[in-house]
Image 1 (cartoon, rainbow, N blue to C red):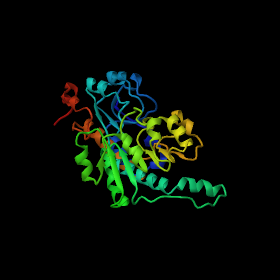
Image 2 (cartoon, one colour):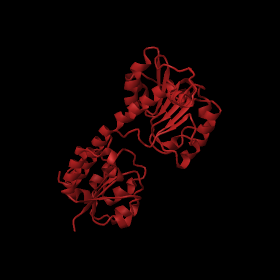
Image 3 (cartoon, rainbow, N blue to C red):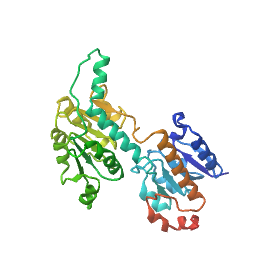
Image 4 (cartoon, rainbow, N blue to C red):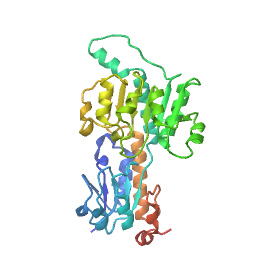
Length: 329
């Protein structure tokens, strides 16, 4: 029986069918049988699996323990909270990420920044309701933009935002990295010591933070200007949903944009005209999908053919006897 490579359901989405995808999968199929999977990866799905191009579903420790042929889990994206990195490392399985959509998320952020400043969502709603009012909108030039988190995506946003802000506009950033003040200066930004400063002083705050811990509470939202907006292209759980819903209803800020669908904790936002929910689509374009496909297929191919793949998260696994056995160089 041939080995198997498990593929995330994104590869079945006809919206992103392309010649590069078909070619990449055809090349991958020469190495092992391709099989799409849904749900969590559990022990019973591990037999014969040599590689996985994974979505954001949970990977159980038992999957790694039972995956005797498993060499690599290549995450189609960069989030790895549910990968179970420690279990993978213990069993000698490489875990990689694909940071191919940073520019895409940065563009999404800029698009939402402009849409909220220009009150596009409100104007559309008014017009469809027969209200043709001229309402107050704002310009980016001379405004203040705050970036909470200044990693690769935050920096990509800064590159695009700085010219739009103009010389009189302010770009404020908050990050816990020790070099933040020097790094911010390179991008024409000013680092602040307290995230509350962003909420208090900026016309728009955008979140670019990994993890699922809630960092935006009602108190922080209350520090915002009534005309200001909060953009969250990162993780829905970063913001207390009930708190932001309440704060907007109390007109403590104007818009909340979150790249999460209206379900689960976000169900509270259903039909709210000033809370904009998108379906985990911020990093997904035709172009970024092709890059993600190529990267993850390349990572799995490298591991199967005995080469070290790019963007390994658990580099300590390279010293595992099992990994040393299948890597040739």
